[in-house]
Length: 146
Image (cartoon, rainbow, N blue to C red; front, side, top):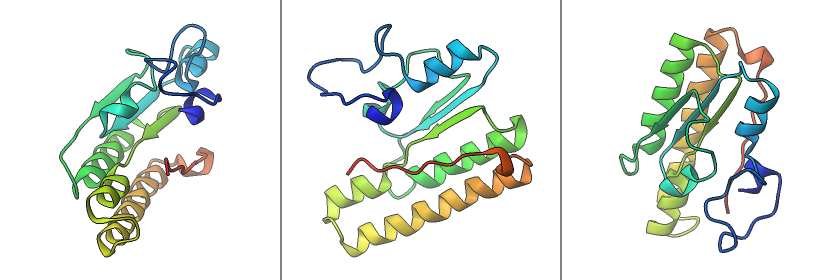
């Protein structure tokens, strides 16, 4: 949440995690640059509350279950970038590593495999940005929740 809002938040103090007094980075971008495009691809309902409803010009939620979360989202995002061009701000949430850790244990062989899979999906997305001639003007931030 703090990555999207630049604040330290306690989930029990504010539901949902956005609003007029605490706009997300997505809303701030749209306020400052109304013509900007915002793309969001998510696979966990918990992360969906980090952005205001309707703020994204493209929003996709899919929950196919591991190990296909990342693959499905990455393919959808890469297809979007290829067809529509790179959004001004894109957000993608991969839940595979976290969910696999919960299911099989932190540092388990299954979780290591999930990390490798997500790494490959990030490469797939970056290849789409490269093919769309957008990689040179794209800042990529990788974050984790644990």
